Length: 118
Image: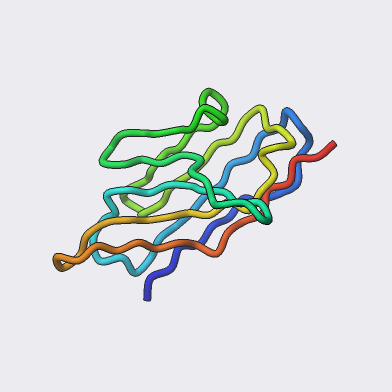
């Protein structure tokens, strides 16, 4: 059974930092892409950061503040979030994509809440 388990969500003040972690288990082959998305109520889930075939991608909204890193030995991905803003408040989801047995897979975690508030 595939599981993506996120951790690290918390409540912080603006300007603070958090580090999110996601560990994937049960995936037969290493994902070619692991990333983080976020969602707020009544809005679409949006990409925050990803490592896709070894290349990192960030939207402008987090570029320079967030850093994604992978630990392939543990099938883990981390998101260091610095200089947090109120608008970073969201549920953050981990995602793993790849191929196994000639078929693509796309798994999501359950999410971890990040609240940035004074």
